[in-house]
Length: 317
Image (cartoon, rainbow, N blue to C red; front, side, top):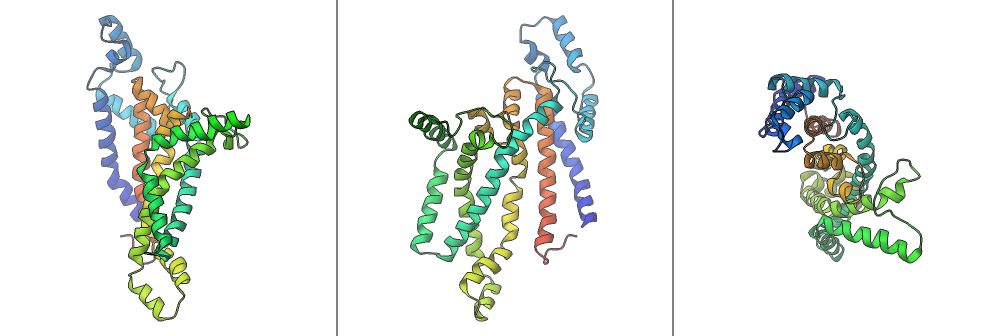
């Protein structure tokens, strides 16, 4: 397993280097100094800002400097638009709010969706199955933004106005476990409701496909109950697509949910990256996207390793 993981890491090194190279080249199609000072800036001001921001160095030198900073986690480079703040500090301050929303949402979504999918597959073709799938399609057919707006109005503003007590915050974030329900529970519920529609339909399709496998026929022939077949044998053998579904979302856990963080004014990584793109804060964009790319590659490798751990039939070679 370790040799396989090492080989996969080595295979993905050129891919990662290419991603970072294309990222930096794309950001420099237009002179970043003009983006920072405006198109009417004087030539001497442009030259001064290029020296201050390190843009006067050769492109490859800037490229290797970024790779060195990311791999050593030495993210002391300063933000262009947030005076005195390093990218490393912005990263460390924004990752906790993102995880406070995305991790509970992933756990709730996965647990509820798998249970609903099992129940739906158990009652396949009957009223319970049709009702659950109707709700799933209905949930995924409504825009994420609509859920956010109605959630803020009904769950925060209207409820506070009627009861005189703020159950949920319309926006903002305060660290601490005691503050989590007030600031984060509503975004988590909205994220769970939206994602459940997609995940439930996917997991149900997996369960229905598994129900026609030979081991299901054998279990039925041996007299195993339908409940045992569905909730023990089938769930165990469906773990590979379930792991695939969950692992593909891991990089997004770290980067946060952009819409939720922007509309709820939560200072997570998604909101920080969004603001950096708007303000053309290139050091922040470079580091955040480079880290995201690394997380995406590592999650793919980890997915293959988990395949072998949960299913003895899978061999890493």
